[in-house]
Length: 272
Image (tube, helix red, strand yellow):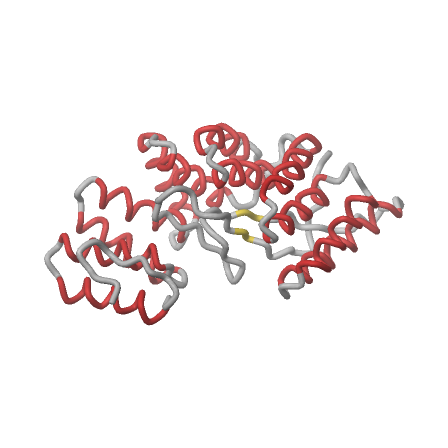
């Protein structure tokens, strides 16, 4: 079933929980919970729409999105469930419910809703990217890669940089750098400030011992989006390898100042 698209932007670029010990950080504005960027679909009431159930579902989806942005998770879930009840065959309604459940920490239940959305819209790039990101965020990184590829095969998918960056970062988690690198670089061709791709490329260059290249990607990542402790930690480690201990120490101080509850500091530094 095709997704409704257009005027009501849900503004839900989600970040899933951290996986393992990876420093890769998938960034979205304001709703940060972890690693992977997801994009909820857009909605538009068709001019010829006469199906009252469909209209009711879209209205509830929009309300759910607003409540989610405001941090009102109980009401967001209530509205998302109303959307699914109004139009059980709407993939975007199931996606919205999955988004809310995920924010509530109900990852397993969110996965069920993402799977329903994929069954209803098996060629939708947005739906497939969301499901693949959920797979990756739940310890199934290798399984997510062909799903990202399916998302990229959708010629109408409006944000290919998102799926490319996610696919590349998840490939690193799956131990497939040869798959990751071209997708990450392709993501930057679409979106030079894609924080996910920049962070992942900084990580891969660091692992490969190319510290100047890692510094360049790290600095671009820090300029592109608000920092995370992991991004600052990697920046500090890069500077240590390049022999700039003063710069490395400044990044450590930023971690302590900006993330006082975070106890992670680069190796060789104390947590005092």
